[in-house]
Amino acid sequence: MRVIVHAGFHRTGTTSIQHMMQRNARKLARHFRILTRRQMPALCEAARAWSLSHDAADLGLVTFELAQILEPLDPVDTRPLVLSSEDLSGHMPGRFDLTGYDAAPRLMATIEQTTQTCLPGADLAFFFTIRATAPWLRSTWAQHVRAIRFTEPRDAYLARMAPHADLTATVARIAAAVTAPVHATALEACADAPFGPFTPLLDLMQPPQKLRAKLTALPPSNPSFPNPVLAQFLALNQSNLTRAALAEAKKTLMEDWRSTARLG
Image 1 (cartoon, one colour):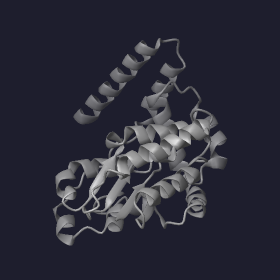
Image 2 (tube, rainbow, N blue to C red):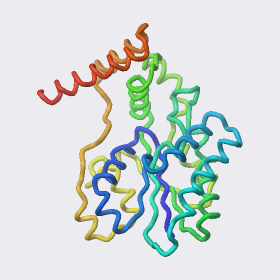
Image 3 (tube, rainbow, N blue to C red):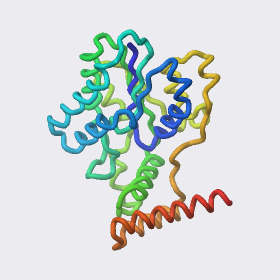
């Protein structure tokens, strides 16, 4: 059985890839078994938990939850299995005192070991989308200030995170921790590809040409907000608003910006 694990990284086109999979789910399902975060939330949460705790019990949960997915698979079904979620590499760096994907090599090694135990002889491969350091850091900061009560100014964040933000080096550490092949493609290299960042993953999946021709392309998903909106998010995070009031203020700000964008 072929198994492809697309495990990240955050803010490198992963949402666009998963939206492409969901939009084309019926067409892809004839040839592939695809699971994204919504189909494996417990496994993703276990990986995120271990990236913070490095506790043996949490790593055991990663093994357990992955086995819960792999063991019931029909061995007669020859369709390749694709697991796609950036959370398989742990929490996004920049929050919870995480400066990088230090947990990812051990998590990938655990995924490899569990896969080989549950599916002896499986043809396993890992795939990652990566991104140049500067735009990746700006994008992760934007995600933090939008999604949580993140109060660190952007320049301070960039200075703090820059020494830890080489995703190519992270992929190299992962490759050293596993025996399966590890593939990586820069977001900048596939931005203009027919299916954007999904294109190199699709190449690795090796679909029939007829299927590829039938797939529906989508525009990029989950783009960052413009700088003036991000500055307002930061100001809201630094305010004394209650959690509920903060969430409502951010929601209104996003809706106002989207309405203006549609009109303009």
